[in-house]
Each structure stands twice: as C-alpha cells, then as structure tokens.
Length: 222
Image (cartoon, rainbow, N blue to C red; front, side, top):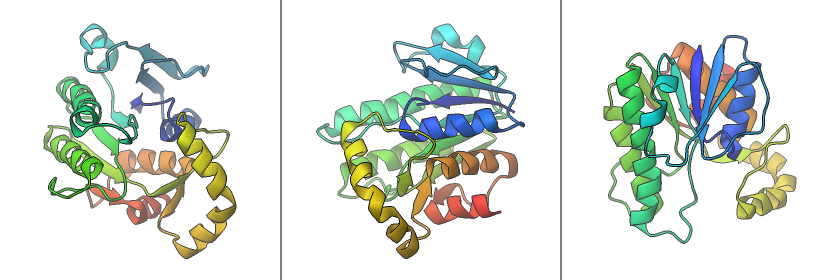
C-alpha cells in the first residue's frame, strides 16, 4: 500500500504516521505539509509546500497512491466562519480534488470530529463547516471515502499536540482518562488506535461512510 498523509506533524497525524511506518503492508508514506516531520525512515517521503491550496508543482509525487489520510486541521477558536472555512474546507478540498483526479482508485479518510453537523445548518460554526467539508468529500469520485469523527483522543508514544491549549488540556485530563474510558468506553480513543483503524478501513472497508467513535473502535476490534 502506498499512502499520502496530510497533517503528519499534528497530534493525530503523528499517531497515524507511526502506525503507517510500523505496518509491513505499507510500502511508502508520503507526507505533505508546511514543515518536515523530522522523522527518518526508509518508507518516508516528505513534501514540504508553502501553499497548501496549490499542488501544481508536486503532481508527480501525488500520483500512484492507494490511500490518503487527511489529518490536517485547526481549532476554530478566535476565527471567523469565513477564515475557518478557508482553512478547513478550502485546503481540504484543494488536496482532495487533485488526488481524486490523479488516483481514482484511492480510498480517502478524513479526520473530522464528534458533533460534526451533516445538515450544515446547525448553530455551531465549526460543526457546520466540518459538515460541509465532509459532504463535499463524499461527492468526489474516489473509490471510497470515510469521514472519521473521534471524540477524546489520548496521545501515546511521545505524541504531542502542537497547540499549547490542547497540551494543557491533555495534561489536566490525564489522571481522569481511566475513569472516562470506563464511563464512556466508546468515546475515548488513542492516537495508536486512530492510526490502526484508518489503516484497517482502507484494507477492509466499512458499512458506513461516516464513522463515529464506536465505529472506529469496532474497526480495531474486528
């Protein structure tokens, strides 16, 4: 399997990259982002681009791929809907549209979030924009596309969020995670589980196109 990974320096992306590099069925991992991951591995190929909405100069490197794991995202805090949509919808679709043209056989897996609004009409700004993004991705001519909506994600194996507020939050939550996992077993996942589930859905498929936390857990258990 040859995969491309967007957002490999983010918390979820770091976990997905680790699982891809460990998986013997993954031949090549191409990462795309504004900065390099700092990792060294024989499977790893890195593409650093200044403008994440323009891939004209790297189309050759984005061809011949079997799967895309799109983990790139930002917090909506302090952002207007227009700006959040430019990043969340605009950058995601710019990448997905060129990938669907170059690799029509590809499986595309998008990391969204619990509470995403598929109707695009709810009160929550981020949920509307995420819903709009999901719906647009599902209309593209990929062989298959899956929208992953995790809830709480526990970072493992040295994975750290780039966002300071999230790092503080996870530090505070750490002592409570065992209780949260016990009380809400379907809503607490790890970065390792996210990576494993995304690889599994590419290999085996799934009955649903929109995967909530319980579906992600079911993939791992299967």
